[in-house]
Image 1 (cartoon, rainbow, N blue to C red):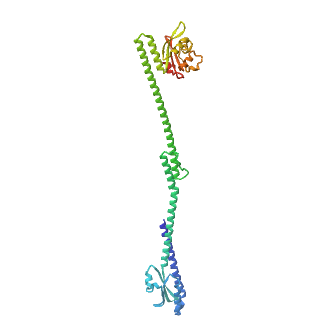
Image 2 (cartoon, rainbow, N blue to C red):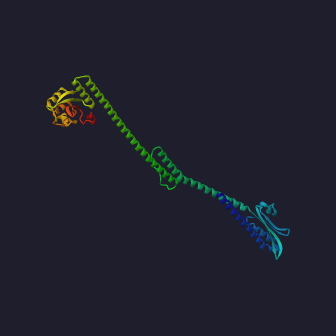
Image 3 (tube, helix red, strand yellow):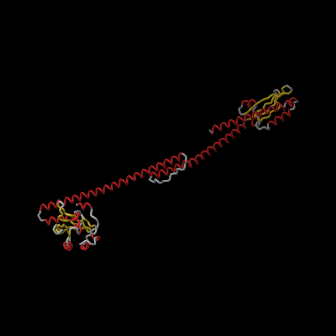
Length: 382
């Protein structure tokens, strides 16, 4: 586009200067046709010479010649073209050569030949081309600098910032700053990146929630497995204990030995440190101590001395109500008959269950624990 503009401008200026140069030459010829007829008619050659000399005030005129027939009245040439004649100038494109007859009273009294150089056009052309080329280069450089500035400020820098944000997000920083203030295409891209970041955060949140649920489910499952394993182990121990009791019953007629084994396994399976089996006397409605496990002589004597009645103490209440009775902390039972000896022996909690045969009360089983607290339902059921 700039080349086309420059070519048009040069062509326009050359055409304009060519027209002006030719007009000046025509004006000089017209001036000669007006000024020279009388001097030529009067053969006043000095006037003719002065006129020709004045024509050279125009720096573009390089040749002037006045003829009277074949007689040269005067001739003047630029110092560069002293050896050239009119025919040379006519054939050269570097000059404009014209001739005109000079008339006086209807008669031809002479001829004038004038030549103008196109050198001024050449110089002006060079100047114009230089100006246009320099102007074009200036415009191109200005556009390039402006383009670089605009590209750096509005394209490169925002893209680099967006790239840094994307890199930070890719490295796991989901809180990285994203400039979404721009309204151009880069701004739209930044908004899309921000939306994608929010989607990733939401996805991470969902994954984290799912992970927490899976971990919770895993913990719950482990707990259930552990509980079930403990239950199975307990069941195995119970079956083993029942098997040993059954074996003892079938292998001996010693009731005391069987009862001692029963109370021993009961204490072991319930996780307690001591136990006892009572026999219920329907006539006196008292519970008689028949078998013990890890009970001191003092504790045995204290219990026998207390005479456990139906409805009194834990085993008495268990027998009366036909259901298990537990005391989580014996120290919180100030009226309990054997509270002091229990405290002295270090026992805090106890569990008593009735021994029934076809709904007939035949005795009671008591286990004691040094740690306070309620017994588990599984222990009570056992």
